[in-house]
Amino acid sequence: MKSANKVVFSGIWYTISNFMIKGMVFLTVPIFARLMDKSQFGDYSNYTTWLHLLMVIVSFNLYASVNRARLDYPQQLDAYCSSILLFGTIITAGFYFFIYLNLPIFEKIFSVDRFYIHLMFSYLLVQPALEVFQIKQTVLYQYKANVAVGITSTFLTTAVSVLLVLFMEDKLKGRVIGYLFPLIFLNIIIYGYFIIKGRCFRLSYCKYALLYSWPFVPHLLANYILSASDRIMITNLCGNEFTATYTIACNCMSIATLFLTSLNNAVSPWIFDKLENNEEKDINKITYPYCLIFFLSVQLVMLIGPELLWILGGPQYSNSKSIIIPLLVSAVLQFAYCLYVNIEQYSRKTWAIAMGTAIAASVNIGLNFILLPIYGYWIAAYTTLIGYIILFLVHYSFVRIIGYKNIYNDKIVFFMILASILEQPLILLLYSHILIRYIIFLSVVLSITFLFFAKKDKIKRLLRKEGDY
Image (cartoon, rainbow, N blue to C red; front, side):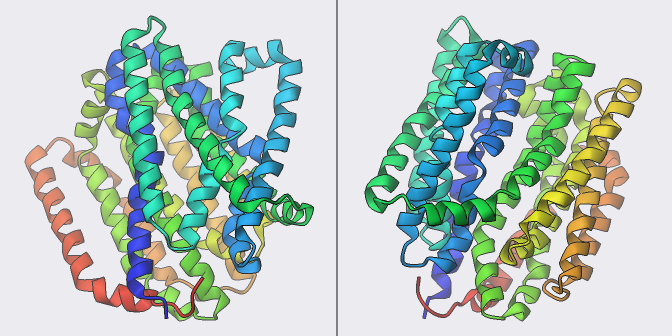
């Protein structure tokens, strides 16, 4: 019998670790927003936008298959991981070679010189190692290594970035080097660990990963376009300074998206196991507390939105407080559609994920193209929200079409979404009443604390699993 404690603590510590790793950019925003001017900050935002976009394309997202492979190849997981890492490096090297042959063209496309492109691909060649490591540790409910890696990567990237930006004349170059060099070093170590432990390169594993993961490429690409096209289009249509202002607001949203990503990555292996064992009722039962915890967490971020803007960027970014709210509502929609994406992943209907995301991204880009020149940068927050509403409806509808109709308590999910959309004017009004906001903030904190302790034993019982991995 696998104890419930192991599952619960693994999920909690994975969430903490993922916050450390994925939250590095957010945690250092207040420092770099003050050390760099708006133009430099906007250029760095543009660079990281392209970096994360290429991370989706050049890796084929092969590491997404590890969760499912754990069920199909339980005794060969190390060999599987080493195979897909080598296969991913070969694919990335092919992209790098193509871009190297056409560097002048891509320098114009990326709006950076070739030094930054070479550095970018030095990272992309080994970047999947950390992703594979974290997913493997998560699906095996082993949290200690995740925490250790999270602390190490956070400390290295933060310390090196701050030192280089302080002492280098070229602040942009210092920021990029400080961020990527420590991650390259860490990924190389983890990469070597997998190759030594797995000692394998099997084409059958590569084929399995490719067939499972390739539909995620257009999905993740469209999803990243949905979230990042705003900044690219604002840069081109409005200017770098407006991109910096919008990016600061997006970093407030990133608190919620980091939390939902961590929660989803922690709970998805459990959902896969429940679906595999035909225990759908257990999933339905946790819908209310699971959604409530995330919804209340988003309320906390909304309530202190103006203060977060001041902490992250200073008073010069205070005029973007009105766009924090629709961006955070978009995070609620992301949380909701991830519930149904997990089912599509389990059923191997990954092509449907790509189709839905492509539709939503197309609508978002079209609306931005029409509305940005008319209304300015702030309208991008609302076009993003519309895109995520469409994305949720597509995934919800498809899951019902393929026969999964009662996995979650859908009424709770829809109520959470509706409440988030309708509360926007009220939250904006509260921004003018600090005392009331803080009283509500404290009430929400106490509610989350009470909910955790009141439901702790029940959650443990629901998460109890049979068998060992």
